[in-house]
Image (cartoon, rainbow, N blue to C red; front, side, top):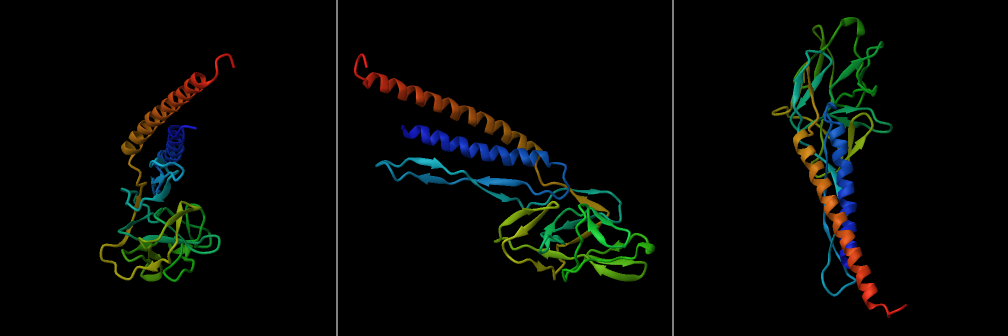
Length: 242
């Protein structure tokens, strides 16, 4: 088979993966704290031919760490994280991390995420408030007060930039490297009464969708032309009358 067919096929596979990630980003443009997924590609060098033939890999995805815009809600249980840090919530077996600061308090006073997972303090323990004391006041360092009494603190954690982020349930992520509690709140903190939006850039993502569609059509056309050329070559080389 002609090398061009393999090259075009690799391009279509890569474009399909890019389309999937872009469509997911578009679908979550309005999801609080959502982190856009990006795709990076590498060229694979064919070993079977004398000349170098470059193929496109299927692509590796990664989560963007860019911050999203924050919106004022005035809700005392809404918080936005400023700077490169994450809130901790309980996962199935270990803490997971989120930028979605839409918190709730259940009937027992336990602080939970919007998806029902317990919100954790800097030591990784669930936070329990007094439901009879009314809405809490939350400081920049995550300290939680009800009246004049401090009843706990939101856990803020830094995820190493060398670590790989993976999506987890509840609009959260896990990291391949251990998280560490924030010690220095210079440039990092909590803002009460605000919510961080998705970091998806709508214009960029819609532009990507159009570009991907055009590139896929070009690859499909090139594949059809290569197949036609191959069929013509086979016919011309076949014995007459066979």
